[in-house]
Amino acid sequence: MHPAIPIIIISTIVALTAKEEKVAEKPREHVVLVPGADGKTGAVVIKSAGGEMVLDRPYAGADISAGGAIAPSQADAEKVRERFGAALEAQPPRPVSFLVYFVTNSDELTPESRQSFDQIKAELAKRPVPDVIVIGHTDRVGAVEYNDKLSLVRARAVRDALVAAGIPAGHIQEAGRGEREPLVPTADEVAEPRNRRVEINVR
Amino acid sequence: MMKALLLVAGLALPLVAAAAESAGVVKTAKGSVTIQRGAEKIAASPGSAVEAADRIATGADGSVGIILRDNTLLSAGPNSTLVLERFAFDSTTHAGTIDATVKRGTLSVVSGKIAKQSPGAVQFRTPNAILGVRGTEFVIDAGPGEE
Image (cartoon, rainbow over the protein chains, first blue to last red):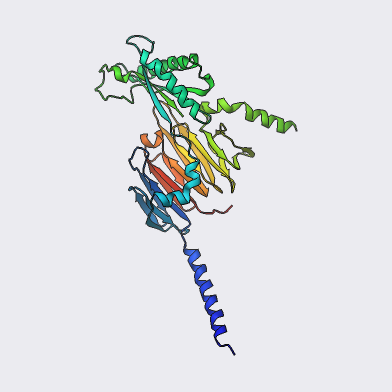
């Protein structure tokens, strides 16, 4: 004579059913915008069958259901670490850049630039399977095509200097950015020594 | 046996050549990490090349960190599958395309030179959404997926 028992069983079944429904509704996917290492936060635009959402504030999040419904959410550094710790830990070290300059009207590096080679080697030693991209830049004197070639010539000169300093040639690639990325913005055809540089990007 | 030898030789050589014109390079790898390229399945380790159309998968104990040629950083946690559908990058103009799909699991992204140059050229897909990237850092959990 325990009339309570059937009630307990029924309520358990109800609870189970409710739980299943909850699982089905649970968002499958989750996106969080993380503040950049430079302190700036960018933006991500999420589009699905159910709509569109822009994330543009630090730790702004979105939950996306299997049907494509997008719901806003707010995360923080700790929540991101909990859910994405392994992925964040696997992140390769951030690339760092060193700038070197040439003695005016020559392909000879300035003495200060030569000194930075030791720092570059130290940086390479810290990294797993390091590689280097040597990127030449020019000022805006001359045509774009001419500067593309000149920047590559400068990059190759620095590549050769790095190889001579003992960095394996196979770890180095060159690129020429021409006049597209001036350090100091100028009008066209303006001579600017600070823009005649080579960037050594260690990755 | 011959095939296995060829495979090993093929893996040993490109460590350096890998950096040359591949889409990217594996920089960190923990536990089980595989790269499926066509019919071939390669165990990935630091230095392995990543090419467009590669499917990169981690096991329950796995994680992987990749740097693409434009300095985009991609890193995946355990039980994750990432397909780098398309990759193009011009190191002079910085024009290019990244089209990747997170089939399942977790991925962290630090966008690189392509996203900076042309917002709209970098897209990440999940089973239920498409993410357009405007120069940024973010994380994606694509859920358990279907595999």
